[in-house]
Length: 443
Image 1 (tube, helix red, strand yellow):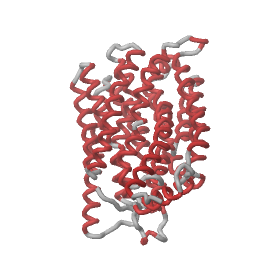
Image 2: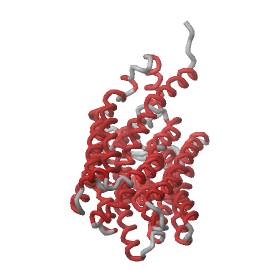
Image 3: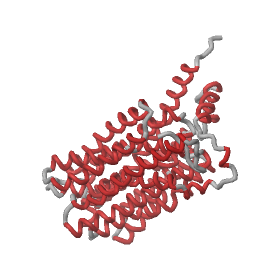
Image 4: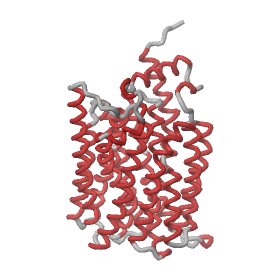
């Protein structure tokens, strides 16, 4: 019988893993992002129909991130306990129904309540998938695959912006407003995909019937070999990671990208419409930055893996966000503003693959479930909850959508400096053979 070479096994197994998991997970994440961010397009009609002020809309939109923060870590621990198949299905079914229920809000109070409940329902999905993929991916594949997974973020807005603009034109059909049709039509598919999760996903490589016994063994060995060896971690609580300065450095680094994605998802449609565009044309123009970001983040993830470099591949996108947010204040041209907003979103999404590869490499297996969830939750709280509100306050005080981006520029700059500092510290610690209780890795 012919002996299969190690390279043949690797090529076959990783191809099967990518094709089995990635397309489905990307589609699921695409609908998660549509349901999280379509409130920005809905606001073009909803705020006037419901009589919401800019501050009320910003506060309601930000409540998603408050409950998301509170439930994120418990949700990731539940995924670890109950398995990805069941837990991801639960998340998707609940958030789809709640997102569709946004069609029935009557005013500020019901808007606040449903955004709060939606955040709790979706909490744990993104970090849960990141954790889930670490069960299936050796470290050498993580940046490119995580970039391909995260491609659902800009693709969601690229696809949904023109669709949402078209759905808004259904205003008055069957007695419903356009924004109500938007929530109904874009929310329910997530629940259907949640049911498919129960059949399609496999919790661990050892349970994958779509791999041969030899392939399952190879994959489990490769994933195990890529985990940091942490014998001194025994006896320590997995919660100890929350006391690590490196952990908080990762949180700060993630805040800049999270804020850029969240702030622009909520406010960019209104910014673009201020140039005199119709709802439909606003949707079309709003999709341009996301289309460019989709292409850029794939190439950036491959570049990070090709050169085995994470530090600058994480920091440069953050610096791009900061520069773009500053420069947009100096332009009154729609074309230039779209270009700069595109650069900001390219930075926000190119950041993700290298960063999560870096972070998952630094986090030990014992702390990964809590660490990944806590980083994502805290960054979303600051980037989404605080910065979305701060944008509304600055805009109300100045009347300028562009000036309201200045706090984002400062946060992105601080995030870039944070990743450079902790990467340097990690290299110095590695040279001195000093390993922290909760983190390790290669910058």
